[in-house]
Image 1 (cartoon, rainbow, N blue to C red):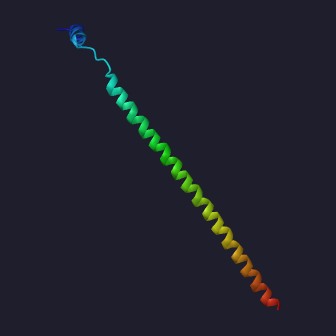
Image 2 (image 1 turned 45 degrees about the horizontal axis):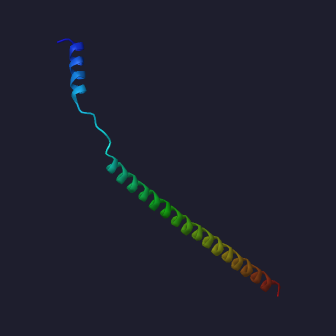
Image 3 (image 1 turned 90 degrees about the vertical axis):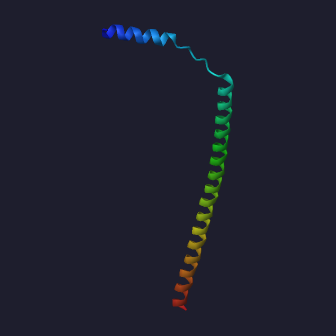
Length: 83
């Protein structure tokens, strides 16, 4: 058997295989699952960004208040030296 005959035999066998059609019900179930997962992912990202945004603002406020307290404490210390 030559290589060409082998390829022809393989192609003949491949042509005998039944062609597959997509399963519409299965595809729809998969789409529903994918959309649900995407929606959950979006909700999770919104929630984490809201929490992260709140955390950043809280850290900024705490840092500002700490700076103000230290500044006032430094002024009081300097004023004691003058009095």
